[in-house]
Image (cartoon, rainbow, N blue to C red):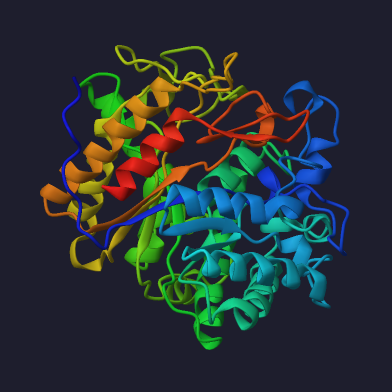
Amino acid sequence: MTPPLPAFPPDFLWGVATSAYQIEGAVGEDGRGPSTWDTFAATPGRILNGDTGAVATDHYHRYAEDVALMRELGVGAYRFSVAWPRIVPTGSGPVNPAGLDFYDRLVDELCAAGIAPAATLYHWDTPQPLEDAGGWLNRDTAFRFAEYATAVGERLADRVRMWMPLNEPMVVTLFGYGVGGHAPGKRLLFGALPVAHHQLLAHGLAVVALRATGATGIGIANHHMPVWPASDSAADRDAVKAYDALVNGLFADPILRGRYPAEELAAAMPGPVAEDLATISAPLDWYGINYYQPARVGAPGSTPPPTVDGVELPDGLPFDFQLIEGYPLTGFGWPVVPDGLREILVGFRDRYGDALPPLYVTENGCAYDDGPDEHGRVADTRRIDYLDAHIRAVRAAMDSGVDVRGYFVWSIMDNFEWSVGYSQRFGLVHVDYSTLRRTPKDSYFWYRDLIRS
C-alpha cells in the first residue's frame, strides 16, 4: 500500500496548466489572426493524422465549464496562455479589443471561482506575419513582443497573480528552428541559436514592460532536465557538458547569471550581446521549471541518428541520445523517472545559489491513453502513480532545502499535443473529441483529494 504523501506548507500552490493553441479552437473568430501553428498544421505531413488545433477542446466557447471543473478540483491557480495572434493579429500594429475581452472574461471567471490566474504570454503561437518577416531569427520580433506584453499587462495586471513571458524557449529553438519538428518547421541546426537569444531578449523586454503596467509575480516557465552520461568516459562526459549547456544553461544562465554558459555560445549570438544580457537578466520574482524526463547522451557516432518525439535528428550533433532503460514508459514512450525532478530542482539550487529566486514546477505530467469504461469511469491508475511519485520528489527537494512554492499538473484536460495531434492524452479530464464532452478521470479526483488534505 502506498504510504500517505508527506505534508506540504499550507500556502503551497497547487495548480493545473494548458496553452492557447492546444485547447482554445476558434482560430478564425473575433479577429484572431493566423499563427505559425495554424500554418504548420495545415501543411500536409506535418501533424500526425492531419490533426489541427482549429477546434481543439473548444475552450474559447466552453471556458466557463472548464473553470467550473477547476473550481471543483480545488486548485489555487490556473496557468493558461494568451494567444498572441488574438491580441495583435498581425504581430505588430493595432490591438484587437475582442481578443483582450476574451481573456478579461476568463480572468474574471477564475477570480470569481477563487482561482489565481497565471498567464503565459508566449506558448509558441507566433503571429504568422511576424514569421514571414523572419520570426525569432529577426531581432525586431523581441520588440514587437514587448509591445504585446504591454497591451496584455495594461488589461490584466490588476488580477493576474503570476506572469510568464515565455514558455520553453528551448523547444521553440530546437524543435521549431533547429530540427523542424514544430512550427515553423525550419532545420537550421546551430543556425537556430539566434532564436534563443531573441526569445531571451523578448523575455527581458517583456519583464520591464509588464512591471511598467503594475504587474507583479513575474517569472518564466523553462524546460529543464538532468543530463546523464552514457558512460564514465571522458568523451561521454564532454557530450553531457555540451548538451547540458544547450538545453539547460543556454536558457537559465543568461536570466539568472547575466551570461551564457560558454564563450562559444555567446560568440554565436547576434546583436550587442553584453547590452542585451543586461536586459535579459532583469530580476524575477520566481523561476519555473517544466520537467518530464532526463536525457542520457554519449559521444557522437555511438548510435545511429535517433528520433525524439517522432522527429528525426540529423547527423553532425556533438552528442548522441541513448535510451534510458530500466524505467516504465508513458504512452509517449518517455521514461518515468520521478527522482529526475528532485535532481533538477536540487541542481538548480546548487548551481545558482543566491541568484535563484523561489521555484515553481510549472509543468509536470504524463500521457496515457485511458478512456471511459462502460460506466463512464476513466481509471487512469498509472497517472495517479506518476503524479504521486513526482510530488514526493518535489517534497524531497524541499526537504533538501530547495525553496519550491508550487506545482502545476500538465494538463487539466486532454488536448492537441503539437506534432502528434490528438494521439497523446495528458489530461486529468478526458475529452471526447467527437462530442467535446469532459469526463473527470480518477486522477482528477485523486488530485482533488490531495489538495483538500
